[in-house]
Picture 1: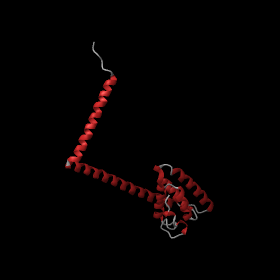
Picture 2: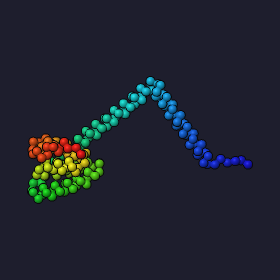
Picture 3: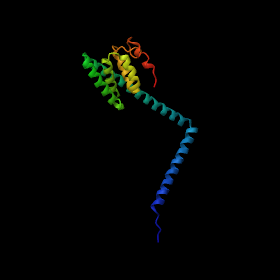
Picture 4: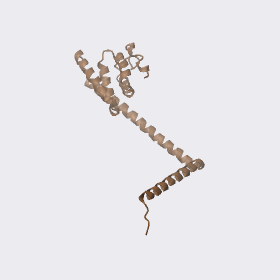
Length: 177
């Protein structure tokens, strides 16, 4: 009678062979890395190439974000802002609420920043609001709001933006949480 090999034995043998092959390759790779100067050069070259690509992608992403921020601010300025006190108050509350919802999702940080920027634009004392934003708004969104204020330039928030307004917001940009 022929004896049959159990499936568990075949699986263990296969697993053992694969593990042995992987370990042998790891030892070979380590030996090659330590002793072959051309291999080391190629590894360094590849590492530099990957770092360069990553840097270019990050720069492109940053440039795209700045372009989107400028476009959003320009559109908001073109749309205009309310002038009546009651309309400003309702607009402010609506934009802050919408911004709080949007800042929960990382993919909508620019839209959230735009909402906070619009609220800041109609607030009577922007420096005070910046202090509140600094404590409550996530840092990436706050950075976007700062870029929007810097691009606009018409909002006077002391040391935060480009204006020379009140001192209330002067230290808001220096606070680290």
